[in-house]
Image (cartoon, rainbow, N blue to C red; front, side, top):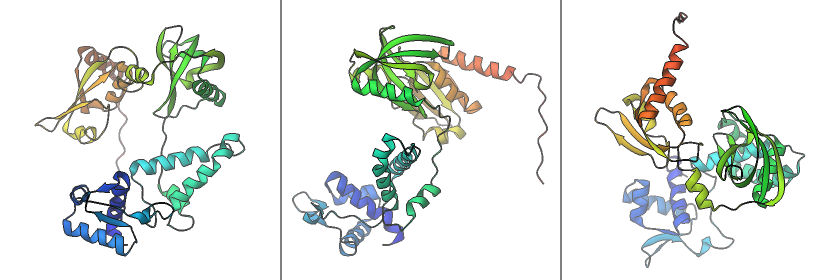
Length: 339
């Protein structure tokens, strides 16, 4: 198989497999190749790789023929992944490999781990899975571990639809409280687990970090049901993990240097974006609580400016002034000069 064409050949098969049939025009547009190149690729797949691709005159599109059905499904040798597929496979492999091998869960999931390793090694020779895992590194920064008994009880209550009794530390206020909640959804965000639940004490939806739970007990009472759509509308509207309350809209302006990265990042699905004539980049996005948004903004240093709303501008100014005060009067250590 021509090395330079490999990814394109896999893409042709993936498009047909995904959509059932694809027109010549769509293939050219997606692959960004000339008609002559596409014709050569299709002929190579059929004559050299045995791909059962045929042209359907009724559909006016390419599809897999009868040889693709049943047990005679065609696969190109080797296996190629896109970014999300490779990340998902390697993440799953790391999670499964990290399980206690003597545990009930790991014994049941070992066949899945074996299957993932086969997928990673497919068509690439013995030991290929190990090579892939050595040559691709996934870093999980700032992970906050959850006691296993808490995670088991929370997930059990979630799936069995039972209430939970929690002893919970609210870190911002340094307060420990006890409350009964009806679990609605588990959320994994930035290497931290959260539980979206109906809090019976507050009579509303709340989000709880599992690592801040000091105790969790499954109750015999059935949980209060809240529709998934309601949970999503209430908990997913704002920026980051902070949820609940009315959304506001922040406006950020990235300077031309930072704009090169910010324009490629997804800060929020509803974010509105606009390039300015001077190369700077404006982003307008919703938030509920300013804390996480401010943390991400302040990481950008002097490369981003908060423009609105006024309360967020003031909060950013105060935090920057407080940070600068830590260094007021401090002498800077001389920097070492390289040879």
